[in-house]
Length: 193
Image (tube, rainbow, N blue to C red; front, side):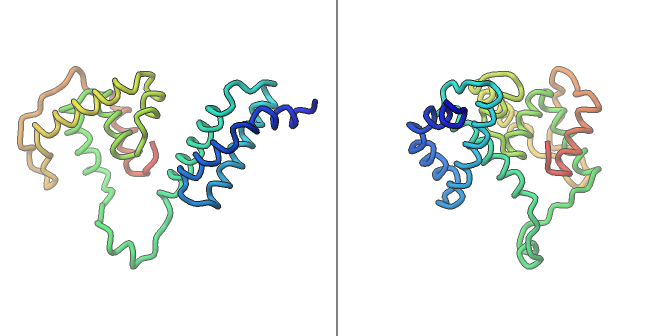
């Protein structure tokens, strides 16, 4: 058998389910079909490289999900017409204020808590994505995020006008390394972690 025929036979029973999953992810018939085709292409490349395709349905689900996440992240940086931009709240990506807020955040949270909070709340990572990147479990991510948010609620918000925070900082464990703080500031300013 030729590689394409073997690949086709292994994924054919799962196409109906994967097509439905792609439709769920995209909410559009046309985008779902494009996503399915791209997922099949990526799966075939993997099959061609490895010579086998274990658990084809879960592999296609994972590929489709990751492709959709990548597409979502790319769309976040799309420019909008000036009329629409004027209706949106203005956020000045001023380096000093961004770094100041991050410094305040790191005074109240550990490095791991800060990183998870940024990934979840700013960069829209899913719990599973955070767990994969930080090599932990999804329940651990949920627990850390819950505790972090509760700790911040108890502390209050930093004063953006340059004054002191409402409560005394409670330094957790150890301060992040300066390059971590710099990396987080840069990520917030560029929108890419």
